Image (tube, one colour):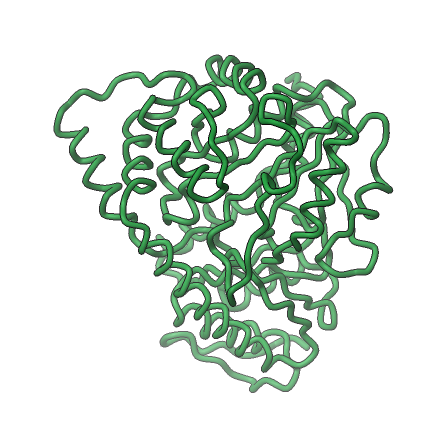
Length: 405
């Protein structure tokens, strides 16, 4: 069987595979704890459900415009003004089936084969594969100082005549790091000077902790939107706990949005009109649900960090946003895939290997689940890796015995 070069070079999504594994084990009755997920447990906003129900009851569920309904675009325009203090028009907006599709069609509109795309490591697992789907070359940039915070110099050292696009994800998945206003200012100005496209993947920008502020990229641009190569990505999945609704969007110059819409029209057509209705309800509804989720996540983070600190040798970076922690377990096992598999096999705890994000020796541990899952999950992890742990562990009625060193 003949497979294309692009198709054969694309790897399976590690995070989506993990969700599948969790569902299979759960269905078998296994006492599995999912600490690798990216799905808040909060209910979807009431307004999202009621507006969706209203459309369902009407029975009028038809095709949507390729780039989103007028009502959806108006909600995104309002959102952009409320949170970015930037007025845009409907022609500057495209609604997609998730923020990931918005990024994907933006890349397809921008990139030619052999163009290079820069993103900061650790990085979202799909960035390299999405770049490769366009026939372009992914370039991961590692901060020279060994932290999770890049400097402009780190980026500049990797820019070549082939660099077409830079992607910034802050707050960052998987680390939870929030990049400084100084860095965002520098990267926006640098991209404008060099004529490089800049995608701001802001999907977590309202899920931040400890009073930290996320920098607004529009504060630093010197160009009007029609001459700008700045693309701001967002969606309802994370902040409104609406992962299954699959509605995201992009805000950019009219010409780029037009080309993105043409591409999307031949891929999936417009995003589901039913799902758009739900997203409109969430965006235009009472926003206390976002603050409630943020406070819950901040408390969950504090609990996770407290329990992780009981494991000697583990290096912990305190997340400033998102609902992920990126934890260094290299003092125990340097191979993150091996460690993640061991935790799943021995104590049924799911984590994501750091190598999937471009950083070996780490695990991404999510804190968007329940406090019980967090505390029990870390206790199981400690029992597996800490040589000073007791010889036995009970998971429900099942007794486990350590048979490894």
